[in-house]
Amino acid sequence: MNQSITQFDSAERKPINELLISVVLPVFNEQDVLPLLLQSVEESLQQLGCCYEIIFVNDGSSDQSGPILDDLAELNSRVKVLHFAKNFGHQAAVQAGLLHSTGDAIVIMDSDLQDSPTAIIDFVEAWQAGFDVVYAIRTERKENVLKRWAFSTFHKTLNLIANSPIPRDAGNFGLIDRKVAIQIAKLIDRDRYFPGLRSWVGFRQTGVSVERMARYDDTPRVSFIHLCRLAKTAIFSFSFLPLTIFYLIAALSAVVCAVVISFVLYHKLFTGLAIPGWASVTITASFFGALNALGIGILGEYVTRIYDQVRARPMFIVNTKTNFDFPDHEAPLFSRSNDGMPTAETSQELSQQS
Image (cartoon, rainbow, N blue to C red; front, side):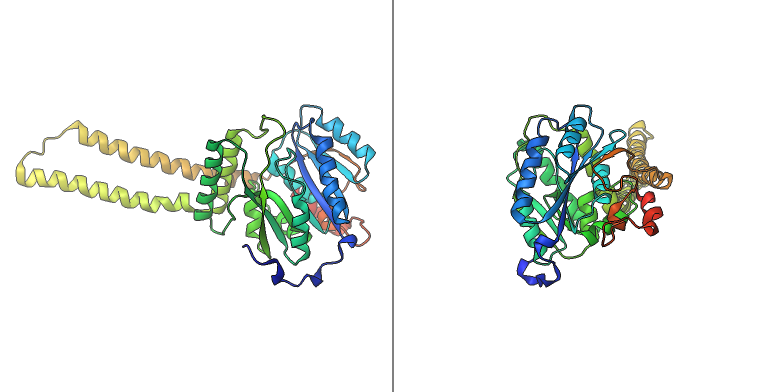
């Protein structure tokens, strides 16, 4: 997906001073860094000379993040805040931020300063050159060795088994054109893995190498268990390999059965040593019992996801909104007209997405 930035004609983009850039920042218990984060993001956007809006999504924070965000919004009309009714998770916050963006391009980034705000300038330059999706390729991670190995192994495995290619070492951080954001937001997947969806929709994509910064503190907000759940979502959402493995398991089972039958018949017919014993029966039964349990577990994962999709509960519930021009409107992304007013035509469609 890495392509030369000079490949496309940038004439299709308006001058940067005529464009609106939206920055979406999911927040969960980040009270200590929010003013500095806002300042850093604004400095990068001001260097570009564009109009911008910064959308913070307060994902049910239990600290003072909510009041701090409201104070920042009160002092700065470009700052908008969505407050969830409870913690719905990072991917739900990303989806909510997309739906409430009105920019010509949308930047998705984390709120812990691991995503460098200065990279926004590189993203916009690549977008202005004609790319519709610009994602960060994370380099020089500051996590411990075990965590770096786990991330690297996951990305390599996912890229190997995914039905559509997903760039390695590319997380949520990046920029997408508004038309791409609309297509991603319209997808009805309940278990969402944003980097995979961003890759799946296609369009012209490129990667930009960005150094992965250290957290401003030593307390990650996403636990290892939640990272494992996200990895599981990515694998089950973008690969059928877990189900396909059962062809291999069936073949292995057939081989084991053939070997056991051959062994028994040989001693029964030629050596007379075929004494019934508990060992062979127990081992064989245990082996196939384990295979059955594995199969039920994998099938259960897919059935659970089908049930969750059919149940169709909303991915998030917004409690309050701050600084939005039309707070009653559920998804400005789909309905922004030339004058910025929401249109009634898409209101029903948008309410189903949230």
